[in-house]
Length: 238
Image (cartoon, rainbow, N blue to C red):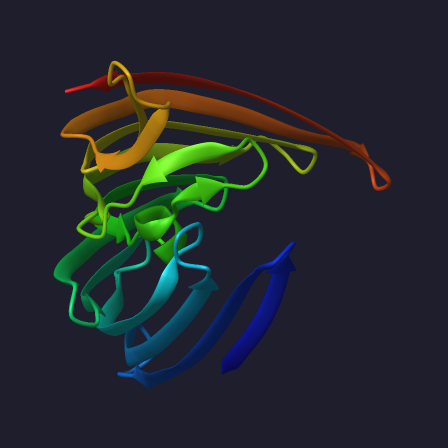
């Protein structure tokens, strides 16, 4: 795929070009075993001028490879395991690799009850704007660029949940979760006596987000559907 755009802000110009490819192969090994693998390539060219205000000229590359194995064990279990490896690079500036494994299982003792569990890791690369922005147009805020900003990392994501079909008209879903983050991206205000207000984008050390969520879905008539839910989140620095 190819994406290209141009944006004008007063006398400022942002040109963005993206070239990418995603290739995937699916293999069925019998009736209850499936393999999925693939490669993703992406190139981003960003040119924000003038570079005294906007991002400047930067080229970023990302290559990722993944494989996933899904298997049915007996009549009640579905187990999925996968890994993904990514290499991200900004030309002549920054490079970082990330590894993202995942394992999940679903146990369905009957057609009305399904219990699920998940363990995984993930990440998010910061955008060129987050690394290199110098001036925020709407609020008139000044930023100090941080080209060495690292990817946000979900070091551990764990979830256990269940879904119950209590008849044809009502369904319940509940889950508890735990997420441990590292290098969360954060906008910090710097106080320097005698200087103008300045912000910078940094990586926080660690953070934990944990909680639970419940929801219900009730359909008394074919054209009438009621949904309700509640989520509790406990977020803190670790």
